[in-house]
Length: 216
Image 1 (cartoon, helix red, strand yellow):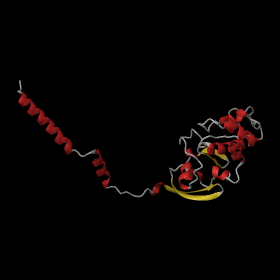
Image 2 (cartoon, rainbow, N blue to C red; image 1 turned 180 degrees about the vertical axis):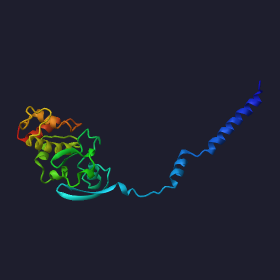
Image 3 (cartoon, rainbow, N blue to C red; image 1 turned 90 degrees about the horizontal axis):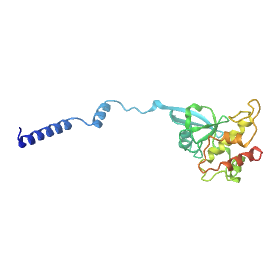
Image 4 (cartoon, rainbow, N blue to C red; image 1 turned 30 degrees about the vertical axis):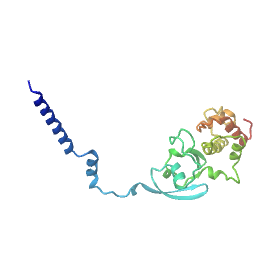
């Protein structure tokens, strides 16, 4: 049987050996730095591209990272901050804009995909001195509370009425061969992709109904 003194010395030897081995190994960060030290750090120019978009009637040319969404191009590069970033996953509708007459979630599409397209944001629909009829109706019917989702709601509502006028059916349209009727159910279905966390839905439908020329 080994003596206690001998056991302690053996333990100390093992600890010292392990510590020496650890100190002799480079850290993960050091290893990564060593691996990349010899590589050139070229500017990330390959990811940049020029894109021209007609925004609210004005041609705008931007040099963007090809991964830039239309939403970020509008907000961060053109400073049109009326278009809101909500979920950034295409689930809330706060970022809705109108592209070539059709509403889209601008967070789900890349800016470079819209070369030459006509894009209308909330700023392009009306001004404080001359509101778009839909904007005026939202004010009249209190179609908002905090107002964060309102730009997307209004853009979506304008495009939804244009869809109905064009005879484009929805999931609840009774007759797919004729122009849909502007009913409360039709409007609610078409606006279902725009979330209002303040729950001003009934007032929103009232506002859209007024612009459509019917009672909600």
